[in-house]
Image (tube, rainbow, N blue to C red; front, top):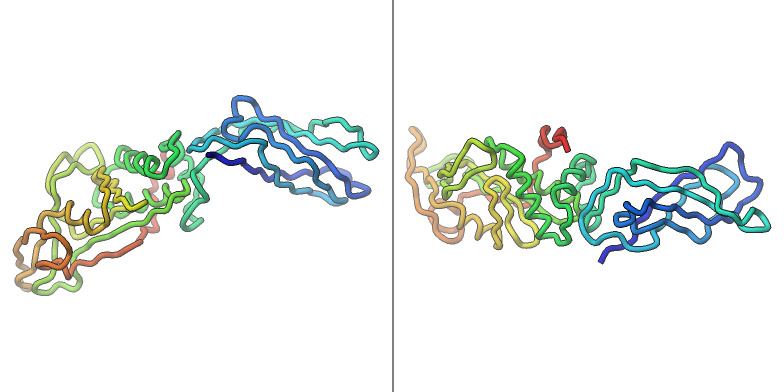
Length: 295
């Protein structure tokens, strides 16, 4: 179920009021935009003091849609009324507002507010439009990143951007990173071999990959990997078991030599105990082509 929307409105005038005045406020929203605002805005009574500006919070009269939406041209006409004996008891038009942008998201934004950029919210809402559940929105976000961007070893950026988009939609999410050992030593993990998959981008094709590390995301108990376009209903360690087929175990440091061991379930066999799992890491970089992506 949706909920009302709230707008913050600033009223001002060239002349100061001679005394604090009780007023009624309302905004008539264009009928084509009522789905996203929650119909018209109205406030029974508020008081304007003798100084300007007067800043008011006004709620919509009904609930907005209970799903992700965006609208870049919302129109509304603001009015006020002062009842007798201090006013005319008539609704007086203040001004029409046009070209307002609205985003409906599933909950309050999550994570660091410095990533709540308009470009990201716009992209996330447009890709997850009409979704009313977190899993549905996450799937759309993953598919959008996989379809729009080209992987070139930057899985950490794709996964982090998945998290940024989910946070802007009000969805909790985090990253997982599974990497080789440090420092290099006999018996340590040096490389990771995956099952065959086709990474994001038009030029790769299905093939087996050898990584030093890989990063993906988690939300709601599911693993989302925008690099491989995989959704895995499991914990991070179960996804690791599914994704990797072999690990390169170091047998000699100088010269560097190793042998590929088959991946066993869990993270306690062979060289896997030397692997490094980082929970909730998030790359601070937002892809430049994301921010500049035409909508």
